Length: 327
Image (cartoon, rainbow, N blue to C red; front, side, top):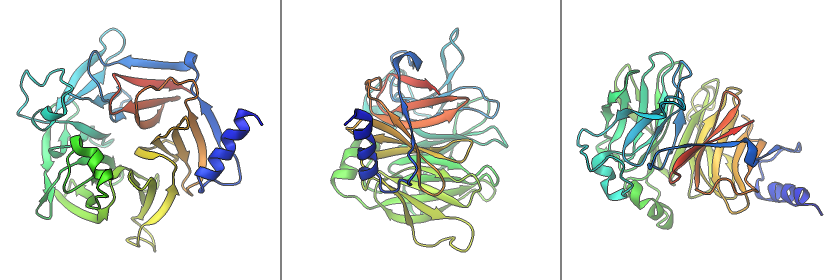
């Protein structure tokens, strides 16, 4: 039996949402993989591009959001979330400084305004204008409960509504392993309406809610539950709007961020021991692509797979660089 046959058997048994048609397997080959070094920093959790196609932008370990300015200029500071930053923050990788320095996780641009929305793990939801600088805090809690672990974020580009997750009402990002070990079920899904400037709690009792992504037609959200190794669907429109959550996909491995590509498919990053580091689903929950790292090019835990301009952009909570794989 060939290694490819063994791989497909593994996929069928470990990913029950798979359709009868085989997914496209994308194997990361050394010659097509690039890395944008962060110059001593680490942890490019999420990667986005502005409405003009510039970037990428990413949040890193020392609390800054950086912008890639091309090979000649490299990374430059675009925004920060914490007004308490000092010189001790610059360049640090110490989790115990994150609450002072800020820790940007989920990022997304509004196509209508050019504003960048930021989920800071310790300080809540922020926004910064197209020229960057010190971001404005929009919310630090909801229903009288402070955010402890603001994490994933996406925007309905038709309405401007921001959807985001608070992974725990008890634990912070630096205690993220305890969210899983303890079986914590205090996570929340929230929305922020820029017109009313109000935050609404949409769901409570989630198990380590992480990444969130809205469908291309804005009818539903997908929410990653890392601890349960699954992706949930929450309907926003239609006859099923507000109905109980349904399981969109059950995985073998721990999922992190989820990103929709221009065709309406969803890429989710997965921490697994079988070489599968990313999976793409269509809107029916069927696997369309599998990202395989059999050559071991991805040495740090992947947090995000995003598709832009013919390449996959790979984020990580610990890596010292942003990965790029040309399709």
